[in-house]
Image (cartoon, rainbow, N blue to C red):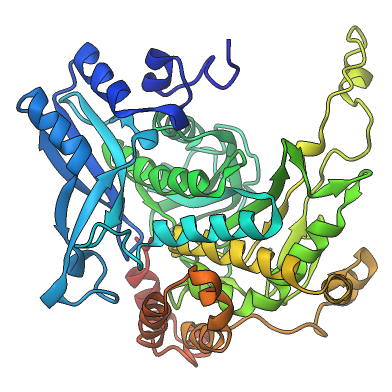
Length: 499
C-alpha cells in the first residue's frame, strides 16, 4: 500500500485510496454520492488573511456538476479592497479538487474545498495571493531545476479563566506537561481536526509563553507541519488557523495568533522552514554539511529580508515582537541552532550515527537516510502575514540568491554568518530589520523590482501592499507604545484576531 495513503486522516484519501493531489471531479462526485454529502463549502482567504466561505446546497447532481465545473462569482472589491475597485469587482471562484475535505464542524454533511480566483476573461486573477505563490513556485523551478518546499510553525495563545490550580512558571512553558500546561488536550484535538482537513503535522507542544493576567490564564502553544510543496504548505497553514479558531469557540476558549499581546512576554511567530528538492533528494545538504545551494539561497534571503517583512509582518504590533532578548530576530544575519538570528539552520541529523540503537540495544542498526530532514528557518514572520504572499516572497528571495553570481552569493552568506562565539558578543554589526509597517513599505518600494521579476508579483499587488502598510502610520509607534501602557493595550486589541 502507498505509504502516503495508509493511516491518512482525510476521509477522502481513505475512501478513494489515492493521495489528495490526484483527486478528480469524478472522485469528488463519487465520494459525495457514497457518503451522503448534502452541502458544499467554497473557501478562500481574502486580503485580511482569514478564510471566507460560500455555502451551496446540493439540489441535484446536475447542479453539483455545475458547481464543481463552473464555480461561482463573488464580489472581489469586498475580498481585496486594496486591489479591486467596486466598479469592476466581479471575480470567479473555482474549486481546487486536491484541497477537498469533510467539514469537521458542520452538523449537515458538508464537503469543503479551497478555491482559486479568476477574472472576467477566465484568466487567473493577477492579484490573487494564491496565484502569486503559484507563479513564484513555477519561476523557482524553471530557474533552478529544483522544487521549493516549506513548512510552518504556527504559534498561538489559548486564553481561559484561571482556576488557580497547578500554576505554570511564568515564561517557562516550553514542552510543559499537564496539569501545569492546561491546554495540551485541546491542542491534540486541533491536530486531529487539522489532519482531517489534509494538514500533515509534524508535532505539537506547549511553548515558552505563559502568564496570568486579570483572572485569565494565557498559554502559548505551537503546531508544526511537515515539509510539502510550497503551495500545499500555504493551504495547510490557512486551514489550520480556521480549525483552531473554530475549535476554540466550540470549547468556550479564546485564541489569538497575534504577534504580541503584552510587553515582556513571549510573542507568537510564524516561522517558515524551507528546503529545495530535486529528483527526491534534498539539495540543502551535501556530505553532512549545508550545501552550496543552501548558502546561496540564504544569501538571497539576507538581501531581501527587509522587504520580506512587508509580507510577513503586516500589523504595527508585529514590530513589538521583533525586539532583543525575546527569541525573535532583530538583525539581518544567519547561523546554526541560534534562535536570535533571522535565518536559523536547525539540527539536521547530519552526524550519520544511529542514536536509537544506542538507547534501544535490542535493535539492529537502521542506517536511515536522514538527509531529507535538513531545512533552514526564517524567523521574522508572524501570523499577521498573508501566508501566500509570504511564501512567494521567500521563494523569490531564494531564487534571487541562486541566480546571483555564485561567488558573490557565497561571500554574502559568509559575511552574514554568525558563529557561536560571535553570537555571545552580540549582533550589533549587522543591519537591523524594519521597525514599523511604514519602514517595511519603504523597503518593499526599494526592492519591488526583484519581486515583480518574471511576473511573480503584479505591480498592482505591490502598490496595494505598500498603501496598506503606510496607512498604519506607525513610524515612531513602537517607542511611544513602550512608554504608554494604554496605547499598547489599544494596539494589541486592534490586532488580536489578525490574520
